[in-house]
Length: 159
Image 1 (tube, rainbow, N blue to C red):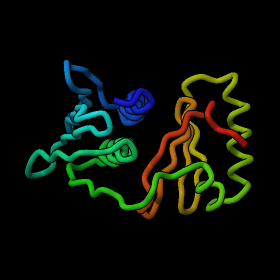
Image 2: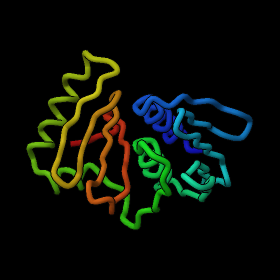
Image 3: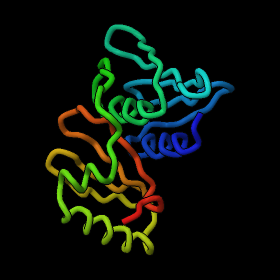
Image 4: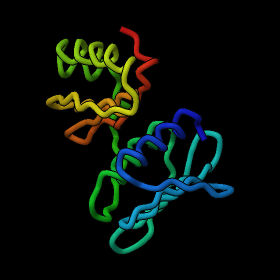
């Protein structure tokens, strides 16, 4: 599985209070509501299995879909079938283009503050695209559920 995704999966599990366990083949995220299993399928895809109200659902996710699918599964308070989004993966450029220079300046300000902080969560907000910084990682989520959720390590951001 992709190394960056493993780190981001751990962050999402922490953010949404899921426990994380590993077996020989899978990463397992658990909470009283649900159990989610992520298994390598091949070099470019994983199999994500989770419970719904009526059944266990599995589908193959490529690299762009892993974080988006997990974010949707982990944030829900009920067992639902998650629909795969057709839009592309959100970028920092999308966030700034949609929400304006205020948010670019806000991110720069937060990055400066984070040099002295650890394990912090800062909600940046937004109208269409919401931004949040969680443990030195920017999480971008589309309110209208078209674009795919993305996680970007702050150290990778270039302005």
